[in-house]
Image (tube, rainbow, N blue to C red):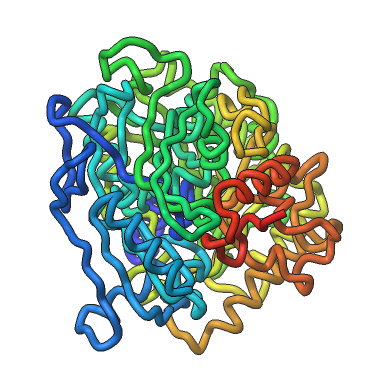
Length: 554
């Protein structure tokens, strides 16, 4: 293999090892700012206000067309979408959000809210949006002793969250591996990452939210809702345990505390951070790869997860991503991570790799192993983006898996990844899931897909707008081929189980691409959808907060 090829493998290794899509966020998220106390050592950059009467260190700022800042703030992470709102309100406190929502409702202006801006669709850049509320200055992270929980503001990136929790208390949350994703949308949609098989989804640790809602009279107000059984607002908390962003209001605070955690010592209220992560990366060349060998490897990956994803499994600490780019990339790879401090960590990883490669008869072109400090791995800059500054046009489609792909699905995967169309920046990710996620009943949180073992992400990225049509056609065709027997979408059943709202895909509500007869919102929320609709009617009776995939009023 040439040095150029090795460099390419190294780059893909980095992307696979950090989980390029694992834990992506719905950037439209009605997210949350965090409240903290100086006694606990609050941190943050632009510094939102903390607590009642806290000083507003930023904003509000109103930016309109003609302002030299306007064009630079129109796009989120996906450059396919560019809005043209009447105003962009950059806010720094809950009070500022209340005023912005009230003014927009009274003026009849459609609202969208952006924290990290990593939405896969155009929810914040819809041409119908007239007021874009930018929460990015609200980025503080700290401990709130009154709530006995950690508070995170919506504009805080996952990297900021991990760094602050680690430095201050040696704790963490089982969130995604892209440090640039905003906590706002990531949390509201469920949130998952490298530690989820061990500790569950992020929302399994969500204690409370503060949400700016708009009443029937159009007036906005801030409401605090917790998971406490006697809380009269508990349904609003429940809606944010996987109900997705942009549905009920603007989350201005998230509080995090693990279920069953007691006491006032913050270091005991969330999972302990690993000290180091052990990672093994294996890559294989497409050249000479037979369909039988490829199919066996992909099936093995799924079968292992079927058999090793029960809550409390000895392998629950093993997290893996199988990155399967189109054959024009030259190779595909497997990245495995585990807390290096777990007993027998190295052996668990080796057992997993042996199970995935069993019977394939192919030798890897790369097989590396190493350990890095956990904070370094989880906050490595520049990873997890769908593209760099010039190739940030992308389309992603997703699905949950309850077991390995069927033979027909595996044939479709190979057919599309080895065909004449497609390129090295398009393909499929299979992401390990299950474990502690499966210990929670589907109705306990808004995340209905609990009996699952993997997530699948079909992706393509490109640079030039002229390639939009061909790129979209490729990934849509790939997805429809895999789910051809169920109307082109992952209808819940023995193998498939719908999709993940933080990987939003408007094709699922388009009858051209979903011919299953199963509504797109059912694919995201399953039996939890009627309850989400009732909560929507209570807290957003006017339908102020909406987007293409939002919860509909009953």
